[in-house]
Image (cartoon, rainbow, N blue to C red):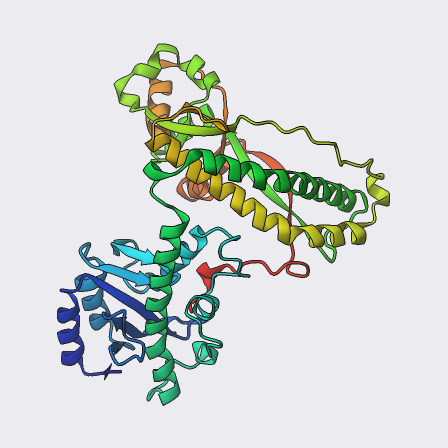
Amino acid sequence: MPYLTAENDIKALIAKFAQAKILWVDTEIADYKSNPRLSLIQVLADSTDATGDATFLLDVLDQPELAKDFINQIMVNPDIEKVLHNASYDIRFLGNDDAQNVTCTLKMARKIPTYILPLPNRQLKILIETLCGIAYVDKTEQSGDWGKRPLTEKQLEYANMDAVYLAGVHRRLVEILAQCYPEPATENLTALGEKYQEIESRWKPLDSEIAEVKERFKAGMLAQKLKDSSYFELSSSIAMKVDFLTLARLTQTEGIELNFPVTLTKEIQKQLGELIADPSLEVEDIASWRLNYNVQQRRKSTKKVAPEPDSEDLTALGERYKEILPEWKLLDSEVEHLKERIKKAMLVQNQENTPHFKLSSSSILKVDFAKLAKIALSMGVELDFMVTLTQYIQKRLGEAINKIDVQIEYITSWRMTAKTVEEEDDDDEIPF
């Protein structure tokens, strides 16, 4: 566990690692809640190391030039694969968007269907204990004081082993993903279809009941004027919309450059007419494929006559939802996984029909807003459709947004609270 603090030693090691093909990287952040600063960079080049002897700890606290050197030689180098967990957090301190060839084990784990990896979340601690066969991983030091020097032996040991665990988790995830997604060219589509048919027969009734319970619960909460309960929480959001030509004229008048994709619906295509073929529009034709199940099974309706929303027993509904949710989640993940494999296999094997599925294609036409606005205004085309003002658009418009008539649309949404189901944590905000 070499712990490097001297500038020359750290620079020499960075130069050495710049020749590597793959590195497992972790960081420790000082004062991550108030004034986040990069404290340590842990680097491992040998994935077979189980003791931490090959892990290097680079102390870069308040030494931005060393961090910059690591970024320039390692993080932005496309020839070196960098493996991190929850990489979106670490790369905030290691190059941001300039970082290249980054593999995120959190994203890898999320690609594995729930029925294969049925875990409450995909945090590194859970993955280590599940995939690496370690009974318990002590993470108490994750919230320690990484801005204080000298670091304790316990902190150094924790930082050291995190890189080892990361390499172990990465190795297992690669193995599991290879099993989850065999080569599409060799997939047995008949066997997959039969498997889907068997799973779908169990999933469909649960899926229907889940949807029904959620709709009844929402209607009941609205009727009974409840914003939250022991199971669900109702919330509202605001969508700001403006008609296309108003936004186009505003950007032209104010000299504001807006670049975001606009989907050309059939109605917009009709309004554009022959102008849709204008080369300046640079229309992007995106092909999409849809998988349709050929075998339709007749099922008896299990839907019961629901009571009036204002008299719904929300506790009983919540308990029923809680009861069927675990089984539904497992079956739902397996259904989606099978459909994905079948779709890829049919495309690779050039099959549009199987005994169980039919594959059909469609096109989505997209064009950049600025190009569409320019041609519409110059040619006097009265395009009539609404544009949702996303946060990006609002930010780009700035104060100019006050010069147009914006339509406000209130949307009532709802979400499951942690009181009923242990939801997956928002790992993008968790630095460890």
